[in-house]
Image (tube, rainbow, N blue to C red):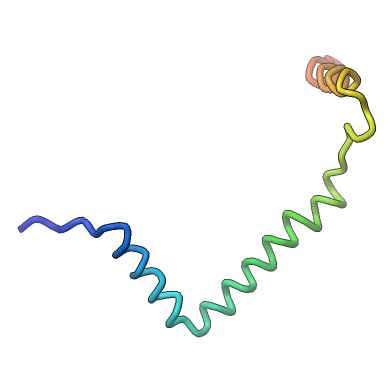
Length: 73
């Protein structure tokens, strides 16, 4: 006997039904989404400032080139 490969529609219905019947899983997914939002939106503001803001394209390219080729760092 050979195994039948499910169609994309069947795969989608399988996962949709599984997510629909979740109880604790919904809470866990909500926690995961909140944590991802905090990591990518909030922490980015504090730890990854936009160092190239306010520079012209020429100044930006010079700054990047200087950072990549500086031997003393």
